[in-house]
Length: 397
Image (cartoon, rainbow, N blue to C red):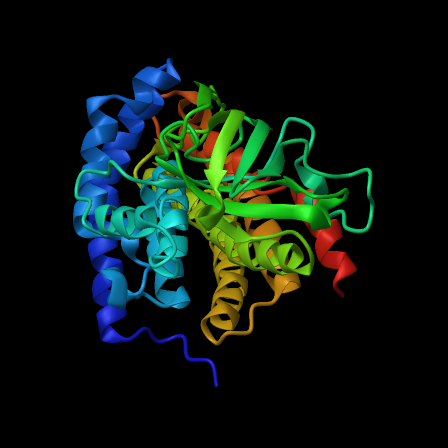
């Protein structure tokens, strides 16, 4: 039987995360959000300070096993922490989600190449936010069609060609590589030995190989604390030991596993953003006086707030089911995608309504609901648009 009661140790982790998110993460994120130049934002003292504190606490290594220096948090605990971090700022929460991608691969590949052991040790012992991975998969012409199997004409444009004991990679990954501008290691997916997405090979590589370069970080509407940027490969020579998985049926299994966890995470970020907007609007509504009474006592306002509460609770329940399935080793892609699309659509509606509760003040950058509204929009697009994600989930029914 499913139990909604949290173990005492999880409650303590949640409360600690909530305090960090409110007192340190949100103020830093608000400061970074206002910096117009993305390069300046990601090299700012505020960014360095908040990442250093997050790494010092250990948020970057929550999902890594305790046997390699991580915290070994199960999926449900991670979901609870992700929501609390997103209440503070969904951009930094996203950064912390993608950061351990290469460290996770390195944990099982330490004997294959010295890089993996060295990187894993550096990552788990990092207290300054200097190390982090990225997933380099989307390309300028390939985003939503990553699940298009069995069509030879649809394949990655970036290619790997075997050359002796190495692979030589050429091509480009799009500006939507999360953490792509700051990462020092990449999970890289490129075409290898054939047509079709099925022939996508996966490498786990250092981020400073000769021939690799980065474009400018993307200047975005929302989630401005999450750096995203292009990555270019010009005759990049990759040792064969860095090949994690060749193309074939394994690609489909790998991407579905990543996307199942990823969609659950994106939905959880959306719940956090919606909750942040709701909590701000509720406090404001119980203080702001119009018509000789606090606006919470006006029925229209009260119904907007109750509708927000209702939708947040429903979205969280669906996401917890997806997390529970992950926790029990039975990940279910349609459930994860249903949870994500429901939650991100909900966040867009709720943040818009909470801006409305603030009235004219809601569109001012002096109030954080304006930022939450912008952040929510990107969560309907992150890791695939809601429309494409929904169609993909429908195919699995």
